[in-house]
Image 1 (tube, chains in turn cyan, yellow):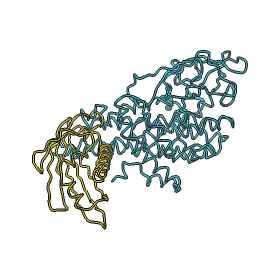
Image 2 (cartoon, chains in turn orange, cyan):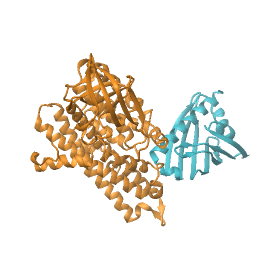
Image 3 (cartoon, chains in turn cyan, yellow):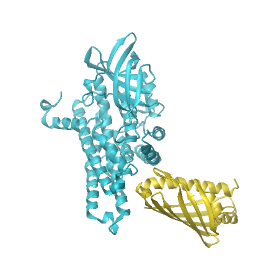
Image 4 (cartoon, chains in turn yellow, blue):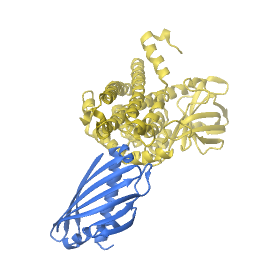
Length: 406
Length: 147
């Protein structure tokens, strides 16, 4: 019975055989989830960043799953990352968001685009959580269309001066280093990525607490006022930063999708438990047929969400072996868009059903399903909105000539 | 919600010492963390309060406790509490047995939780309760050692 709503290694074994080392990492995520459950819950109620999360995740090696061994990582197949995030997603999306930013958006991006010194200097500290990282792409006026960003850079001697505002940035106020995207002052199209020390003169940060969920994730606004960044801190090719950004988003998008599978599992677990213990009208509510309908729907959602996520992870594994294969890249992007679009919608719907089964108690942050409900809404927005995924999916069907944006 | 726990501990003391300890309600109560207001009703009954700390379930929870002494080596504590929007019933069974120079203690507890606390979810309640039980065992070990 448990198999049907816990992360099922039986299911994944039908697609991929986990090695002993991979299985150990997956088991470590179970231990991490047990260690994190109570602090995550407590910090959630206080609406504050779960400061214990980075240390616990690093202790179990979970910030280095997709990072090469030479930088202190575990160098594992993306499917392992998916299974880990699926388990942690049962606790909500706060921890998941931290991993997304620290490992998938930043460390993995440094690994793909960084030079030897950058990799050596920044990645091991990300894996050990000795430094916290943030990814500064979104701006107040540039969300789904990052290429329209207004942050600028201009060359000045041996450095670049960056000006602009980055908005709704996860880890924004706690990061030691930030990957900041800006366009050349004289050319909107020439976007470049920079590694910026958060202590640099001209950096000011403001915490954004007024969210409707995701309370254990730090969210901030970063203002850059003539911030001088040494030239050696350019990440990836000059003027091609948008490719750096999109590759990072692809990693994180799959991360969001896998956590959403966890949200569905968390919703189902809590709902089953509640249905068996709560008595109304003289019997356990699980014996009422309309409650069974919710349980059936969440169970269906789990089935519908996890397979596209697993399949996308396997496509991504193939793509990571050959970044030059454009066809594989297009298919991987499509699979990840499908996975995120499906899993995020079903996660929100499942959490909503779980709240319904929990009644008034569910409509409260004291209730874990209330937390899942509030958290899961953002999954339909961050790392590419539902609408952006729809456009990508539709384009794959209609053809490039019908692309809504080019 | 029903949460079951069990375990086996070894105490570095003769069985008589451990027996004296587990049958003394005041000594046992003193090992419960974040507790207070102990009041002995008679040899086998007492009241006290504990302060659970999970989410909004924080504050003082009054408990009524009964010790049932089945035989010299078998003891059962029945603990009931109501407050903080929750209701807790716990049955703790303790069985002592002689080892060469030490005492073995087998224990089994079953906790029934209703109300707000139960809605938080079994996994989390289990984790918090396990930590609480671990602290009690450490305290008992220390007290028996005379520390």
